[in-house]
Image (cartoon, rainbow, N blue to C red; front, side, top):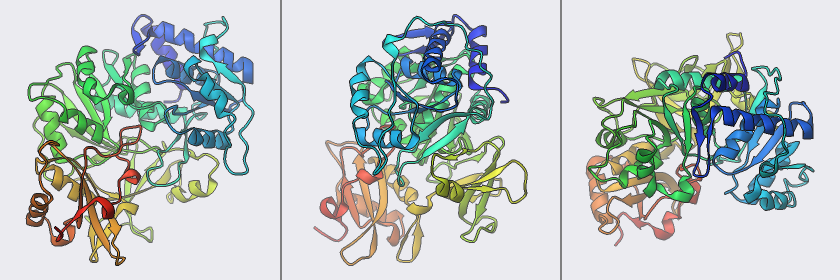
Length: 520
């Protein structure tokens, strides 16, 4: 881990020059080709901005160009900020205004958008910076040799902005050492090797893309990209088989929806590893894995975030049986220590719930230009040394064997009638009935100002959905009265972010659409 990302990648390019490094629908590049393209980009970046460590913004698609640009920026000794071209222009403008990049890299399909972006107002009172534009499709014939810059493992590699699902988006800063450690942990737990063919399913501007890209390219494996937003989940299953994907990472909702489209006969003989995370994973998801991926060696459930990934891992195989409604978050990852603390910052009693704190030397450097948020989330280790504490904002409980049960976000913890409700448990109940494919449960205030539970449910059979009365009867028979939602909303699908995660902020108001218990 005491090397840079380019140094590790260049080792793979020397070892496997003729292996496929990356493939998208338009292009396939070997390790030699990708390294040479990244070198040309690096030299173009250096020609425009010198060798100072500064941010470079990327406005590119989801295939070969953006990955080559990431490597090129890193080879030039700078760090990247990947923008999502499918998101509102105002969000990209706000990120540019905050990070103040020295350069914006785009390609032909997005050059017009890049030019318009510079005319969009940034943050209030903060004009967008004046930036040169580099068109990847119009690179000059520059040298394809490695630039040879000496880059410290502690140098900044990228800034990734959170999806904003729990508040205002903020940029998490990561260095090369963090990426090498993340890659090592996922490589060891998943036994990833040069023989693997990994799928890249999430947009490049998300934390999960870092794991996918570097677990492939820093191991000599092949990285194959699939645009879920454009192609849809209906064609993903055929693509996994056609491309002989051996390992893929997915948010839980995407995996659940994919399995909902499969027939009982659908199999994926090449897949040997599935990694799930980013959202609660239900016991029913394990059954889906065991039903449709019986040849897979393992499924690994991960708990992590933009600030550190993974925190915990829970391995699942064909014989695993889950005793809880949700799959445990698992055991601490390598070089990670878990602490469960109460509101006063003291350790909780054994078996009691508490806020999850992470102690490690491989943490996010902090939030870009947000010193107050950084100070609140990242704390010095009270025992001294080079480790720090990260306050996750999640609740958890440790089992006697050290396995962590994840109890949801602190800000998603709700109390109904004075009792704490874990909404993931209610969601898992509905999906466990066999009638509901997806569920989202949260709290809302009724007209009297009392907090009630609401559930948004996607039926397994949308053409013949269960009745609200049937669902309420099942819930009343299985759950305590205070855990039975006061409002149910049946939907064709739940809103999702561009990374495939549930977008809770886009759920419709249950007071306008929901059928409430006790009403006709």
